[in-house]
Length: 106
Image (cartoon, rainbow, N blue to C red; front, side, top):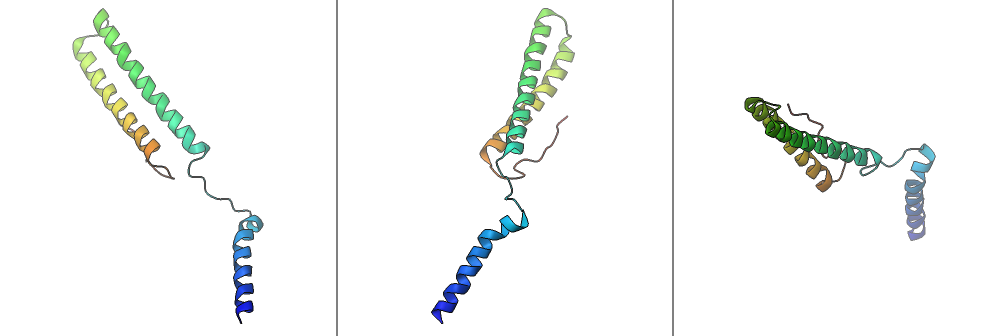
């Protein structure tokens, strides 16, 4: 009786191990190339927003942009940069699929 139970359990375990090989299904990637690409894209967008802030500051000091325009553009760009930093923190701290929805501020 125990021998039969052992054989059945062995067949079930072997079947569970071999099943993905026979069906061709792959394990889902939770931290693969797609996630790394998304992190790089968010980092790039964050860097662009920070560079834009530096450029706005330079333009304001050199008199190329009016104070009101500077405030409006600066506030909008700071908000965007902050959102990107939050999204990047979330992506880096919470592994797994769908860690952060792709939302756009603006």
